[in-house]
Image (cartoon, rainbow, N blue to C red; front, side):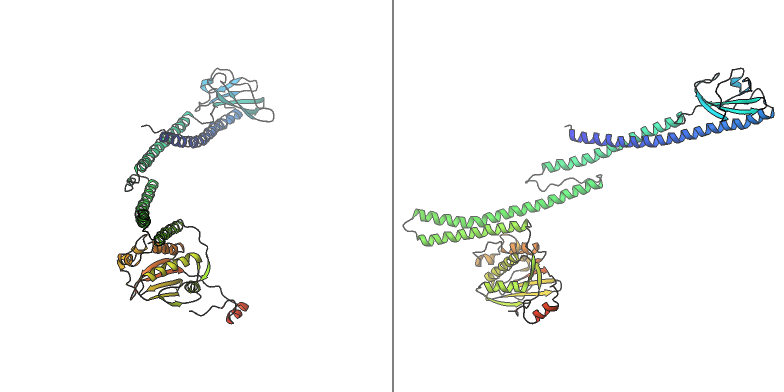
Length: 471
């Protein structure tokens, strides 16, 4: 099928580059021909000057022969004071004067172009010189072929031939290169058009004869397809997991409602209503966590401000009640730039996870480790095997042991916690511990502003800048 767009690109590029080449060749050829023309004109004038140098001494010394030696492309005539031809070159022998003009009284030389001079053929430039003799001024006429501005036909033919050859070569080369590149682009486009959601494994071709730019384009397209395929796989897995986790409470709620409808008189309506509301709460929690994940993945802007991580964690622990004993090791003056609400959500998710799996105690610590602020949440539960330490951060992923103990979790808490950590340019990982699971958050530390002068005095005396002792 004829591709008009491709043909248009080929024609436009070929004609465009050929026109540019033609303009450049025309400019260079014009300059070349002008130089050749000036050279040939100077050569012609040099021949005229040479004829003057040879003939004038003969006139003045009285040894002028009637027949002057013929020069190359030059004709001579000498006229006495009575304007009679007394000497000439052979082609003007026995012929009248070739011209009638002469220089003015203020000059001894002038020239005119005659087409033709008397007794000659073609256009020639005739130079008239006055030679002063005792009986009056004699005239020396020197005729030489007129030099055109381009010099000669050989130079003109050479310039035209080289211009045509260069323009044709440029056009053919442009056509070949553009056609080759368009063929590569068409192959990439054709492959992309055939890639659908069910054929995401396909990739665009990267042939060895492609230009480097086309190879880079094809490589970038394939990298994009790799990411798209990976994202699509995650989306399908996420959709499958979300459907399963949403379907379970919906199925339970539907079963309870159908049983109540079938046996309205035997139904404990307050208990049934409480069960249905519990299912609604679970659905609402899952949907809320999904929206939170969507905002985090969209990289919604964070409300960053300096915060003492130890104080922030301590305040959250003070505001909540936990079933387990909380052991604190919170260093102060560990300042980070963070979104307080997001970091609090991360901490709550880690604490909720630890509380579901701990036996009797949860340890929370904050400290500075060089340029990094570290928050650790450690429980004394069964722990997580090394091969599962990345899996638990996937959405809707709960290990078998946690499913037995955790009936209220959405399976999104740890995924949300990691997204929050990465949004703050930090990391959230599970590290080795003697017992239980040890979650470690690392964030870039922010140097606390230096306190000087009056402010230092106030801080030393427990004023505005004083911090409470670690609790």
